[in-house]
Image 1: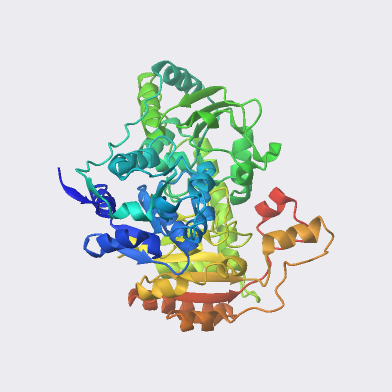
Image 2: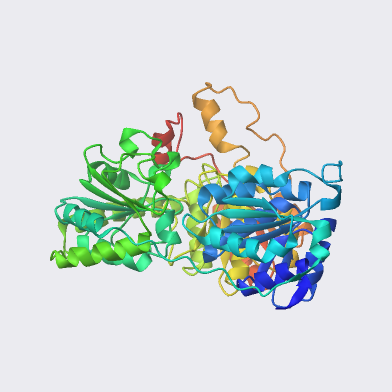
Amino acid sequence: MATMTAAQAVVAALRAEGVRNVFGLPGGHIIGVLDALYHANDIAFIRVRHEHAAAYMAFAYAQLTGEPGVVLVTAGAGATNLVTGVAEAFVGAQPMVVLAGRAPSASVHRGESQEVATERIFAPITKFAVRVDRMEALPDLLVQAFLIARSGRPGPVYLDLPADLLGREIACDYRPAPRPGRVRPDPADIAEAARWLAGAERPLIVAGGGALASGAGAELVALAERLAAPVLVSLTGRSVLDDDHPLAAGGLGTHGSPVSQVLLNEADVILNLGCRFESMATNWRPEFSPAPDARHIQVNIDPAEIGRSFQAHLGLVADVKATAQALDEALARLGVARDWRREPRTTALRAELDALETQARAIAARDDKPLHSVQIIRAAQEAFGREAIYGVDIGCLAEQLPGSPTFLKLHGARTMLAPSSLYGMSNAAAGLPVARIVHPDRPAVGFVGDGSFQMMLDVLPAAAEYKLGVTWCVLNDDALGSIWDMQNGRMEGRFIGTEYSFQPDFAALARACGCHGERVVEPADILPALMRAREANAAGRPAVIDFAVARVRAPQTVKFFGIVNARF
C-alpha cells in the first residue's frame, strides 16, 4: 500500500473518482492540497474571485454532467461563503463534494484564527458533514463522501480538513466509491400502475428533476408514445424531453401555459416521474394543481417526497428510469400500444401549441421600445442554435419567460442550467462558464436580470481568464421585478428598494473585466449584437449584452401570482 501525505491522498481520491475540475479559492489551510494539485496535470483548479461562485460552478457542473461538482476552499469565511450554493445543491438534489480547510487540530477550542464549527453550519444543508480528526480515516471518508453524494436523492457532502493533519503521512490505496445501483420498483406496484394507465382516458405524464437525474429520457419517450400521453415538465425537469416532440406539452405553473394548465386539471390519471410539485409549479392553488379526482401515481427515489405536496394514490419509492422501463413493459403485456400520432388528443394538443407558437413569434417580431424580452430570447436561439447550452437565472423576466417551453426550446438532455426551489439569485448566471468546460465545442448563453447580474460580477474576470466564451443576456428593467410586482399589487404601488435610480454601465464593466460588452436599446440591433457576442465567444472571450427591456409579464405569470396592471 502506497504511503503519501493526507493532502496527496485527497488528490489521489479525486483522480480515482474521475474528477477533472476543482472549483475554489486558495487559502493557507489548504496549501498542502493545492500543492498536490500542482503536480496533478490531469485535474484543473478553477480559481474563482469569490467562494460563492465556486459553489455555483460546482452546482452547474453537477447539472450538466450528473457527477459531483467538487469545491476546495479554506477555513472560516472561505467555507461560510459557500453556504447559499451548497444549500441550493441540497434543495435541488445536485451531487457536490465540498473540501474545506479547518484550523489546526492542535489549537482547537483556543480561539484559533478562522476557527468556527463549520461542519455544524453545513450539517442541515448537506447529506453528510464531518470534521476529519484522524487522517488515517480520510480515504474511507472520501469514499463515503462520493457514494453519499451520488446515491439515492443526490446532494452535497462536506468534509472539514484540519490544516496540520493534511501534512501527515498515511497509507492510501484508494479505490473509487461503488456506483449506486438503481432501486427497482415493486412488481405489484408496477402492475397496479399499469392497469390504471391502461384504463385512463386522459393520461398525463409529469416529469421533474428526478427524471432528468436518472437519465430517463428514452424511457419517458417510449412510455409517453405507448400511452399517447402528453408530457409536462417542471423547471428542473426541462430538457429530459426534446421540446420538438409532438407530446411535449409545456411546463408547470409560472413556467406553463393555458394548454398545460388545462391538461393538468383534466387528466384522470397522472404519472408523476420525479416531480415535487413545489410552489413555483403549483402555488398549491387548485387551478395550477392536479385535479383532486385524478389518480396520482408518484415515483420518487426519496420516500420523503411521496405525498408531500399532493396525495399520492400510489407511491413508488424507486428509480425513475427503472420504473418507466418497467411500466412500458407491463403496458406492452397488457396490449397497450396507442397510435399516438393519430390520436385526436395529440392532434388537438399540437394545434393548441402551434397557436401559442404563433403568438410567441408575433411578439418576437414586434418593434417594441423598451425591448420585449421574448424578442431577445428568440433572437438568442437564432444566434446560438439548437446545440446551445442555456442558463436561466431568477426573476420574472430571466426565469419565467425562458424557463417556459413556450418561449425557449431545448434540444437534448442536460442543456439548461436552472435554479432549484431555493431560487438563489445569480445561481445559473454564475455557473454559466462551466458549460464551456463541460462542452467546449458548444455555445452557451444565459438570461439574467439586472439585480441578479450585480450579484455575480466577480465571475466576469474569472471567465475571461480561463477563456470560457459564454454570453450573458442581461434583461435590464432597472428593477427587482418580482418584488416590484408585489409592491405594485399588494402594497398599492408603495415601492421601496425595488427600483434602481442608478445602474452601473454593465457593458463598460464587462470590457474592464476582459469581456466583450454592448448595450442594446433598438430592436434592429438585437440579433447583430448576439452574433457579435457569439463571434467573441468563439475566440474564447465572454460577452455581456445589456438589453434595455420593458417590465412585461407573461400572461401565465400574471395569472399565477395575481399580478395587477401588467402588460405583455
